Length: 427
Image (tube, rainbow, N blue to C red; front, top):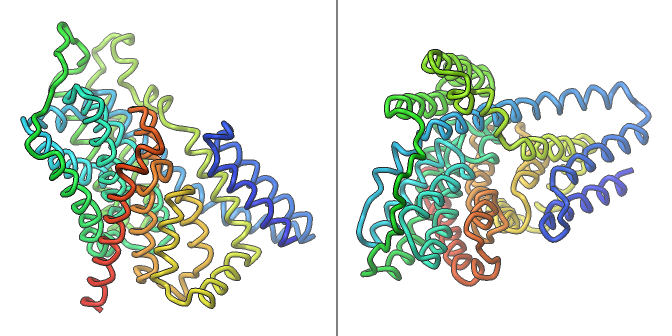
């Protein structure tokens, strides 16, 4: 049984990693893996009651992550529908490319800690199209935006899916992860940002021609500001909600979504249906990336079978014996996340190491949040932010490897070194 489970999982993992050349959506591979693994486990164990209980337990943990992500994605879509991000992007103005690079890097870094790295990347790359005429300039900016978005998401419990998984799973707490990973994440951005800004020094910003009669804004300034600050306020308040009430984060995000929905309906109640249709929560729900949600369900349930059959525990023991050092093991996981999706990697690590042996806010969990979050920047296919940038700006894989991967790798090791040094000084 164990051999067949491992073989099925490896084949499914390969299909997920090779999603683009195979042209098979990774959600399909993840769902197939989950179905096959649980079927093999149920038939081979012979104890349907025990397997059913374990499936129910895994589903409960998976549902918490899924409900949280659905709520967060919907809030972001509502803000975007109201052109709320104009509140930030309209203020980004400078005449020098190097100054713009610093500005964009920092805005992306902090914005992705509140939203998520995928949404932030899409917002910032869309902004670059309005600010930069030359495609070559936009490519460099897109590369830095990917690095900044992944670095910004790593230190926030709501900024990156993997950090959110660790937070909801109880492996990390909000304040501890911010204190431990903020500086290393910042260093992982500052190093590549400084090198790129230096390379662009002295060059002016070449803005594209302004289109006349651009009536893209269909909301008032009051509506944009209200939905932007209310949406961000809800997202930022979720960690506080969890700390005060001790309820799971998904409850906080759903509660906040209800508030946003109520306010939206009140603000637009006097408008004609046709005018307010695209501003409603119902429309926002139809725009969220359900494919990614389904992928999380499939991959988390698939990894759960390896956890219940103790395959992951055995893998953890083998890694400890072969490599021996936790910091090296976690850094390897981070580099591997540049090639394959970091969600199953972190899900597997959560199954490999128990909370009994490695309690909340342990070195392992904090360093894993940093490495899995920032390691995805090394290759453009290593993160959702990278894949989005690849599609939006038609970035070639080998262009990214030649121009950006080295910068991301230097930043990754600089941040990892910063974390290890900081940990030694504080412990």
